[in-house]
Length: 498
Image 1: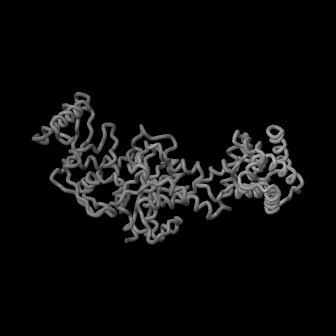
Image 2: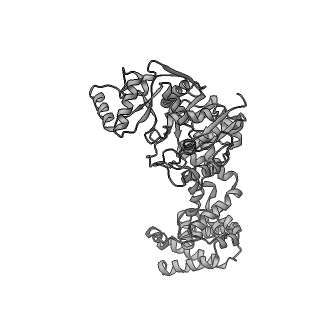
Image 3: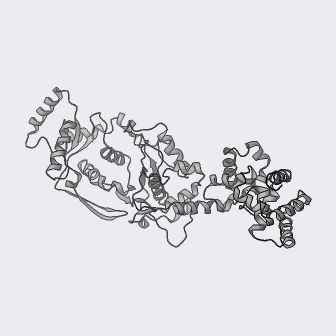
């Protein structure tokens, strides 16, 4: 591989950072960084009607959150700017090449109305023909075609510019991922638009001009762009430019349904922003996304971004569809949470504060206690940090109501005996009792009353925490305020044990 590798991630600010786009960005970044190349961000914002407010900012912020950096971008301009297509269009960077194609007769002005185009499509469907554009100047000389232009202009019609497809040609390339591919020019559906009536270049034209002028050497993108490649190769050839190396990564499919991951698939969270809000870790997202359509050597599955960079090999990009497995993502995130809980702890505090269980001031004052609560509540089992809220909520911050099933335990013969013995024993214990002593006390009640299992533990849990299950009870008791527990026990006794 040469040192002059230049790759780009070119998002459109029409939405937030999708998992599929994040994968494109990540693999381009890994490719550039592994080979000491250049990673470029280019904003493709010519579809102004679909652009959303803060769309560009959201893309860049989420890429930074994932740990990706770049060498050239709108916020870090280099010698190949501007880095937004709208600015490039304003500078006339596309018009120059459209004019050149018109002059060479490789493109032409088309004045067909949307009604004419619709009628042609209907006729082709009726004749069971594949949809294709019908060239309207067939058999005319250049002068006759120019006369037609003038006639249409006089009618107030505005043209699009179409590229004249060389239908006899076959476009072939050796794809980095998929191997050798050949697509006949006839398969693109006839002459296609390179400039819209409003003067904006279309995607398949602008991307070629941008990639050439920015000296892009390799284009790694999703499998859905394979059909665009022949159109782009036509432009490279027509303008006498070298074609970059293409690599089309496998589709991402829903692991549960086997269908292509669609933005309309509401069963799967698909935007990086959503995972950030739930408390997924950027290292885990990189780890998971990096395994979507790429496989390392060996059996290990937990890798840092730096490890990915060191071992990245484009030859290991998979031809097979990549399965989006939500459970695997949760497992990977859990591994990263457990790997460095001290680093994760502030995020867990923030989630508890945001849920309104404790004020930020009290969380800081009681930080040692809160850390122990989080450990006892089961931080090792969470898939993302927001889950900690429900784990710590009861009984450390709230008590849920006693259920009818709990009342049956309390009012049984064994339940009354256990509750009475526990009240006496707990009241006599000092406030700084440790977990081992609490366990020994409960075992003593077991031996004295000869009651065990649920008939022993459930009544004790209910009168102290309004729960029948949860974290280890002796460890919880160490962290609960004794005065509040005694009040809880008194309330339960007054309501259910008189």
